[in-house]
Length: 285
Image 1 (cartoon, rainbow, N blue to C red):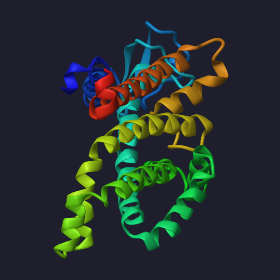
Image 2: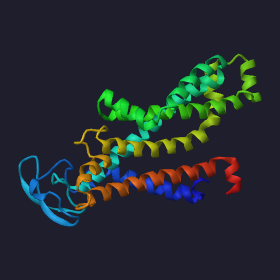
Image 3: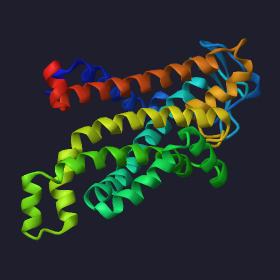
Image 4: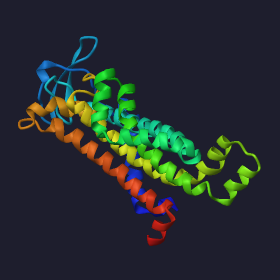
């Protein structure tokens, strides 16, 4: 059923290719992305230069996507950046969904918690997501864990509101009322009877969180408040090449293409999943 939707095929297929590229980066990459040689700085795509390895040996190397101002291979840095971006996107989605599911189930099922939790969530949503991320990274210092937490926190209220709205309607269903009448523990009702009926919209929401996380991670790195510059990410590669964009646009063009394709593929996949998993949308399709 899912494969019958062209959006799922295109988006899922593109993401699968990107995932394979990320996993095979050590083999597809032509050189270590941290190696550099001053003699090979600012080479254009397809030019040959020299690279000095950790043992001090110098060898000829073809820079398929050119080199940056430090003489590092842009091609290898972009491939390794795929690993970081996909990892950040997936972990941010898992963290935001996990926290949002717990908060949403509690807010929707326990009436006395609803007002407290939702006012907290409204307060978090009142602050722009990118501002929250920049503030947290600036306070806690840039690291992979910090960036993931900083990006995931602004998404928790959105997941919470989604789950809460679903719980408010599902808790009035006969099978839930029957479980309550039988004395079933509240946690069991929430996670066994209510949560399974929330999976479809949560999967769709998760894809949008992945796209948002990949984009924000690149923005943070581009602004210099994300992951350390020595870690090859698309944002870091573009940040290092922005001062020479007019003369050497390849430093921004190639990572920018990978970033755009990734975000577009995730959004297309999300639209396809929504059209397929939502009964109302499925009828229209």
